[in-house]
Image (cartoon, rainbow, N blue to C red; front, side, top):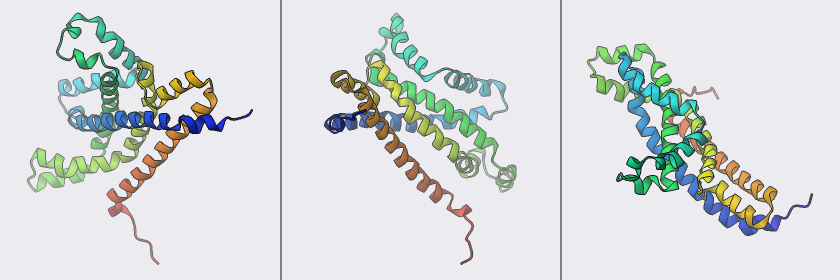
Length: 233
């Protein structure tokens, strides 16, 4: 098999342009989803079954259905309802970009909620009792003890979720967005060289994942530096 390397280099600027949209979707959805997951994770640990059940139903749906199905239901399904088309949100909901961003945010928020819920429940009970013993309010207990410890416990699982979100963002191309995968398909339709273009797109995804893993590793080491045991010289 003879590889046509020139077609890769000629179309690399377009692939990099698509990767910028991919990064934008992933960064925005992870940021907003991570913020929204905090109150939902706290609700999931409530003793009240009603408070606990509402976020459970939400996370069960988004974790139990494929991301592709969620995209199709949101992008193609909502347009079938006249109430949606007449609402003030329709100028946004009819745009593929906003639909993808909303679905990605809801999806990653569901997974992050469960990660945080497990991390909160894994916080040592002694730490919580110590906070109560010195008279901390419930708000300060979560702010100073429970949530900081929960984030440290959930860091490894959360990094995996962000990587999965990066790879899952390739589905945005199915609703006409020209992200990295969508741009690759556009270039293939023009050049008829799928192997070379998809190879280049795969290398870019691999590079983005590598950069993220290294950055996250540095962040994790900095956050958990107090746990490192100094070795004798």
